Image (tube, rainbow, N blue to C red):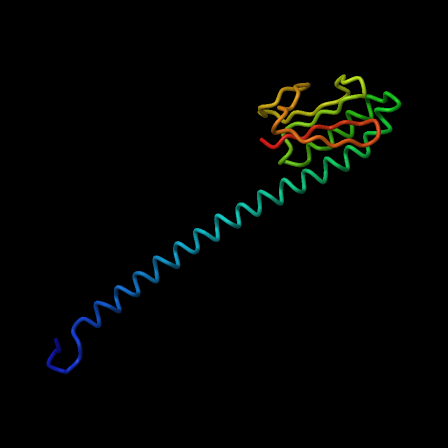
Length: 134
């Protein structure tokens, strides 16, 4: 099949089809990259919160060892500056709640235990902090 100029008539249709296919592939790749970037961002935010909780666990040893609940509340309350932290609780060696912070509107209740399977625990000297990824 040729036209009067000697070119194949199906060539323009093939070029348009290839252009549409390429455009769809580029859009799909952009969505995949955006989803992957969001996933990496969530992982990084959790990693940062984990590091902050490890630092908090290390700094809570003295206030808990000397039963300084005021200092413990101050350290735990400092986590309010991180918008990714919904709740923090510090327990003494007897398992009693020493200090807690719960962001307004958060699902966790002050003093509530973190669920076993989803909880991670960080220990440092006499402190015991539980972090929970919701």
